[in-house]
Length: 525
Image (spheres, rainbow, N blue to C red):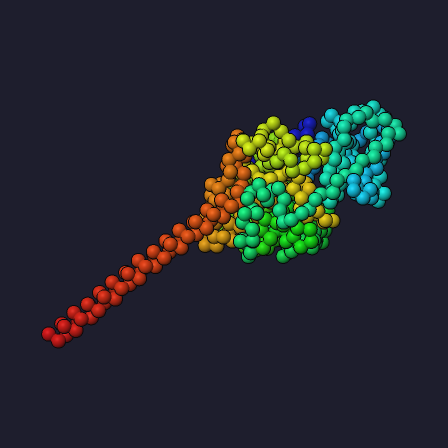
């Protein structure tokens, strides 16, 4: 069903729509021809592009869309809505232009060396508004703000340093603020997130070798700690075939959490042996881009999909594609969103593992922006807290580390927050489970069911409400223990089955010999 969105009394504003098949993820050829004929017979329908699976992205007004849907029930017609890439600096109010301006100057340097820090973002937050600037090569930035407006300053570095928050102050003409940032100590293989899920106790026993993971995101940049096998760019050639270009850094960070090999500074991924595939759908991606990416994953035999993006609206056609992905053995994992609201889509889809974010007190500097994520919703261990930005609801499957997580970005390493970060940990764990229990790689609906059951049943209850933590915090040690136990049961069952089959074959051979003897006796008689 398509409902027109009225703008006054005018319903003729054209929008981008997605036309597909109401009963399947692939458009039948007959319906493709039908849409061709409808377009040829109407100046109101203009094709923007065709997807490989047959769906069509078109431009038309809402009234035309409603009429098409009512006349052709086999067609699924929905607005091709924009996707939101879940921010690594969640919880900030929107950016706005300023009035009656004054200029506030900032100088940002390294706390140890004193060297200037370029390309740091300076956020000046006041009430419902945010004002933003960036440092140049000399570590200097200027932000234009309404005079006397009380502001809280957040310095967010591009990489290698902790962020920092400054005490609230009024904006004044000529105000100059000098601040320093502490380097992130990148030591050893594991971050606090790895430790929280019990990964150090697993060591290198399993690496996700041979498991194919697709990161549907902003692309994954080339990085010495990341070996991206390949990918696909859905963005209409606007970035060429550049699935390995990541303007936001978002996909590269998720990819590093999943599979970084820790070649240089020791930031290891959960499943460093897995094959990573980059599916670029952002910036400015829409439902049609996500649909194209999911169908690409089906066609290319992906085992696990990780999504750090979403929408407040559901999609009928993406629902069909996710069901098709599950039927082909793909475990889908998605972030629940970063705006402290209801679980976003596609995390809210029943074929998706929906992941919320937790943090841990003591794992970041008190003056860093990560401290803004601390809430009063503390786990029974007294340290784990539900991240203030994380969405929540009955759809949450599990929670995972999502505050102050260091991982790869295009220019090095950075510690970011977000439910995308948490979802990346879960995607990596899914790969380890498939590595430990290869017999469940059946390539059908049973495969994601097995993975989901193991992840949920092995999670650690933090004592938080279910709508916040789901089944609890993911636990790699228990999950892989459960996977190995089930594998032994499967092998024992198969062994017992083989023994039973051999016994039946022996009985059949004896019967055959007895029959032969009986026939020989009759012939002699």
